[in-house]
Figure 1 (cartoon, rainbow, N blue to C red):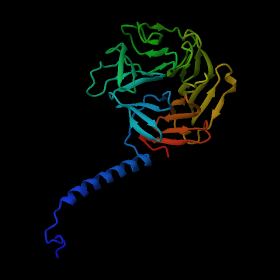
Figure 2: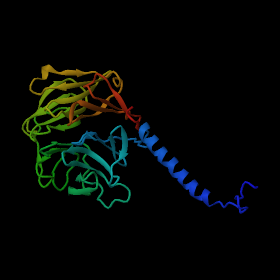
Figure 3: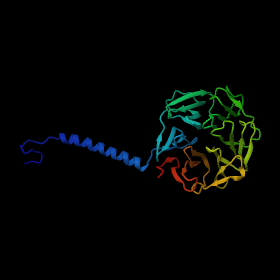
Figure 4: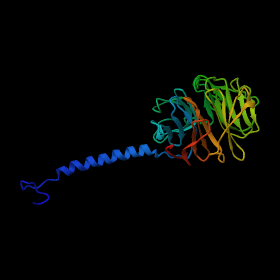
Length: 316
């Protein structure tokens, strides 16, 4: 009896194969999906990084040239919504403020002016200065939403370059007198709860203001500041660089009690951004000028690499 004949002498058809093969392909695809997810491999790659911050639920957002990269649960993904080139990225408790340029296919004005992005990237609200200004240096208070910008040139809301702030989502702007501020501005940070408290990093130190930028005091002088952010307890987290990188926690009310955070993994590369997790104050993430990203869950005792040279890793 032939191998393709039944016991009754009829020939066996190929219908069974057409059922088995698709099932096999589906099973292989499912297995590959779960293997890739477990391995932490990623297609996230970026040449430019324009900020870094945690959402209230502990996801890490990084604006890159083509939208926002997100690190969550040991894996990377792209944020939903338009793939805009966000600059001046500033996270708050219900979304983020930003400036920059629209992505391919977007109907937004170029430059963006001031926008607010909510609903996990799906909703973009234009707040002003669309088609006029691109703010590269901007920061917002995480909970009270005061926004500070370094304005590069005159526009319809600001009659000169300089430091400005808004307390009403861009409806009105006030020019800060910035008395005492010295050096080229490299970073801006706003206290997460106090919209009148702003800090600015320059090549000459960390300048701190409690009166919405009217006056500044250099609380960490003679340091080349490359990154600056506020912790959620009101402390400052500063990255500096001379021959190697340093990272410090600064108490603005007692600057002499600065705490150096161990940075053995990144000490040869300047820090570009620092972020603290609002859900866990011991978790810090730093990025470097070479687009390496490191995370610590114990305030610097150990570091895990999340990205190397602009390529997302699994964080394993």
